[in-house]
Structures are given as C-alpha cells and as structure tokens.
Image 1: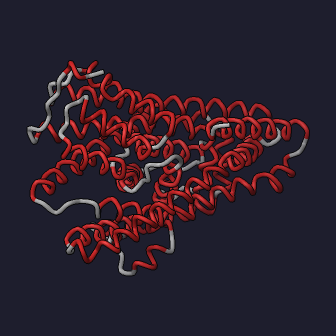
Image 2: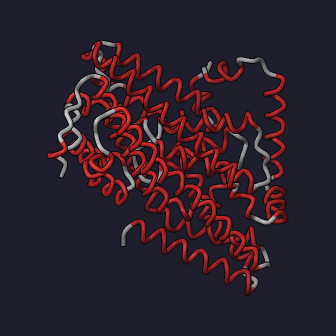
Image 3: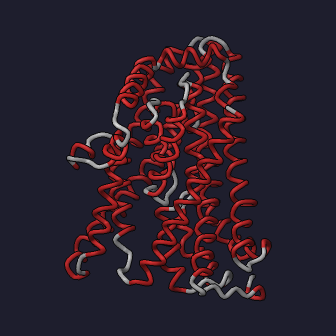
Length: 430
C-alpha cells in the first residue's frame, strides 16, 4: 500500500476506535493505551524540527554562486519568493478570519479544550504581557541569538536558528570555495540523513494518525457521540478553507502574474508545467519533482538554463506558498478551537513566523507539520493541537505541494523575463 493509503486506513481505524469507545465506554483504554502513540508521533516531529531547519537552510544558501549576475538574480528570486509568500499568508488569514472554521466547534467543546490546555493559555497571557512592556524593537532583538546552543535547545527559539542558518550560509558563499568544500559536503550529507529521518517518521505516520484521531474523538466527544459529528463538521469547513486558498493560488494568482508580466498565455502556462504539477501531487515533494519542473520550465516555458538552474533549486528550499497557506489557516483554526483569542499581534506573528519557517521547510512529505509546530509555538498554542488537523494533512499536503511547484515555475519565468532570458515559444508547449 502507498503511504497515502496507509494514512487513510490509519485515520479510518482511528475513527472507528474512537466512535466504538464513545458508545461502549472504552474512553479510558483509548486515553491510556492508544493516545500515547500519537503523542510519540508529535514528539518525533518536534525532535526533527530544529536540525531540519538548520541543515536544509545552510545547504541551500551555500549553493549560491558569488557572481554579480547571480547576485542580482538571487536578489530578485528571494524578493519574489518572500513577496508571494507574504501575500499567500495574508490571503489565508483573510479566509480564516472570515470563515472562522474553529467556530464550528460548539462553544462548550471549545471551553473543554481550553480548560485542558489552561496552563498553556496562562503562559500565552504572560507572554502577551511581556510584549506589551517590551521595547519597540524587542522583536528584532529577539531574532538575533546571543548563544547558539541555547537557541538550539528549544523549538521556541526557531527564528534565532533561522537567523544563524542564513548568516552561516552567506558566510560560506563569501569564503574561498576550496576552503568550504568539506563543510558544504558535510551539510549536504547531514541534510540527506535528516531527510531520511523524516522518511522514517512518516512511515510511522499511519500509527500516529490512528492514535491521534482515536484520542481526539474521545477527548472532544467524551461520552457524547454528537460531539464527534461536530468535530467532523468543523474539520470539513477547515479543509475547504485550505483547499479554496490553494486553488486560488493555482488558478488565479499565479496565472494572473504570468499573463500580466510575461507573454505566456494562461493555457500555455498550465500545459507547460502540468506534468510537474501531477508529479508534485503524487509525491508531495518539491524535491522529487524538481528534475521534471526544471525540464518543463526550461524547454516548455522558455526560461534559460542559467535562470532555471538557480531559481528552481532555490525555490524547492525557500518557496513554500502552499505550505504557508496551510500553516496560517491551521494556526487560526487550532487556536480558536482551543479557546485562544488571537490578537492583531498574533496575526502578524503568524505572517512573520510562517514566512520564515516556510523558507526553511524541507521539500519532502510531512515537513509542513513540522513547520506548523513552529508557528503554533510562536503564538502560544499547544502543538498537541496538530491532532485536530493531522488526519487531513496528507491530502492537503499533496495539494499544497502543487502550489509550491507552481509558484517556483512562476517566479522562474518572472526572473527570466526581467533578465531578457525568457524565450517562450507556444509551439513547443506539449
């Protein structure tokens, strides 16, 4: 069976176990003997978050070439990637605030969840009080670590880890190639090891999903079967919100940019990159799709080899618009479900944190969950809230990977057009 089928089966088994427990009084058994396996899955995701961010960012940045042209192309690429990510997150927050899928959980259920995580809510309030009394530029000060090992010791300091990774990677680019070649080899090797660890964790995902879903149904529904139906209703609205945001990016946002700033037609754009989109959907990995993406962008969109070879590998590392949309909507959904009232500062924190964490997201299945842990931590929401949405993560991961790949191709075409290196020929679009 494929991983998608296994996770789907695990979700189904979890639902069955949870519902049976509600009707036949097996709640204690589920909470004591099944739910812990879900907690283990969450802990494994948190375990790999920091090394994944640090190594993948350093490896990606260190592959830049220090020439004037590529510096110019690099500036345009990073600028466009960050701009599209910020716009994607802002649009996602708009959807989440207008629809408010977390509100579809009954008020009493949200109160129950809030009481279960009362300690975390209190910590959030204390953090908010600290922010109010802090200096205006305290946020900028907090991004710069004074002790790297202290920053590495907790997921709550992830922005500091990202800052160091950027600094380290840029310093490697500035150094003589022969001196840093062993270091680049080290990070490339460690990055490969980390990605293999992610693969191992995702093999455990079906069991983790089963345990989380069963425990979640028991936690939320308790002895009331109607509570489970309320949960599924809220999850359905949440999933539709994410899908709407992703579809908007694929069918409206990117094509509009392409047709406005280049001579590529809407239909030609999709015909050119459709094989890459299809592979992205089936693999849920921008990295696995990269060879096909590069081939289609170069030979069918007409982007020069020089631009393609720089922009697309960079995009597989730093451009995660689909992941960002998922993170923003998920963060709001989980926060509301747990009874957290998000302030304007919390919303801005989501924008900043989701943007920066998406830059460091690995182009592999399941990485979005790890990045969501970071976003939830930044706004003071317990990472256990992942249990609410993890069952839907795999199909949504497939869709958001399509968005990520489509965004990479869009930026590559824009950069090539600005450099006069876009030679699109509609007759070559197959």
